[in-house]
Length: 107
Image (cartoon, rainbow, N blue to C red; front, side, top):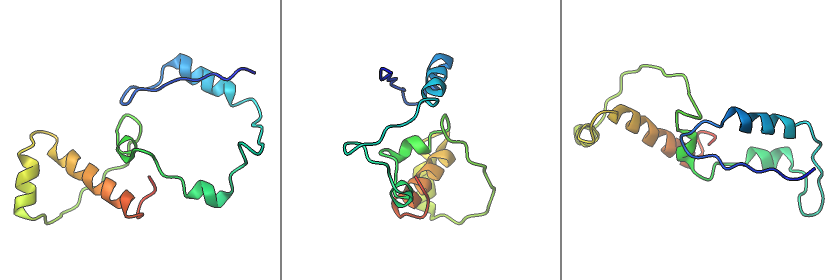
């Protein structure tokens, strides 16, 4: 079978055609060799995204939201509010990226 590749663009969901090709490719067995060894469970657990921002992109990942009360330093809140509409989402993304970088969340 020939190798088929598709390049996905950030923020754009894959087309039905691309999804169909992925599903078709999944039917073929994977061949492991010295250039492409099978990964252990431990190695798979250590995987992290190259760009954590993609993980936080709502087009790909929609975590369940939970409302809480949180005290934020006034200057930090003011700085985020000055960035305009969507500042709470940007605060959440910053917290998520920080948690991923610290190893508290899987990226």
